[in-house]
Amino acid sequence: MIVGRSFEFQSAHHLPRHPGKCRNLHGHTYRLEVLCEGPVDPESGMVIDFADVKAAVQGRILDPLDHTLLNDLIDYPTAENIAAWIWDHLADSGLPLAEIRLWETPTCYVIHRGEQPGAAGP
Image (cartoon, rainbow, N blue to C red):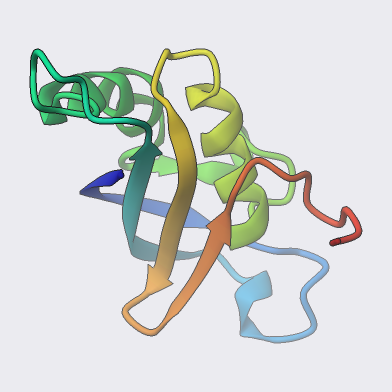
């Protein structure tokens, strides 16, 4: 079973190597979905408690990223690199991560399942 929780945070970034307007400083309201996968525990009836997901994401992701300049924390903060950073910072949290989805705009997002950016697919 897959359990998910959504979050929002606001951050700014710039992409100096980008050929278009994204090279300039600008901000986004990011939407983050954290999806956890595992069996349903027969005692609790849950894969994971939503509160546990919130606590891990709040301390490891939202607190450091919300209302910041992402360039100060992430080397070349494209949506892909931000998603990889988020995954890396949640990987040892104890959450049974399946994937994360990061929306940079309401219509543009990336999905990360633990693979490294630029890695060849199957």
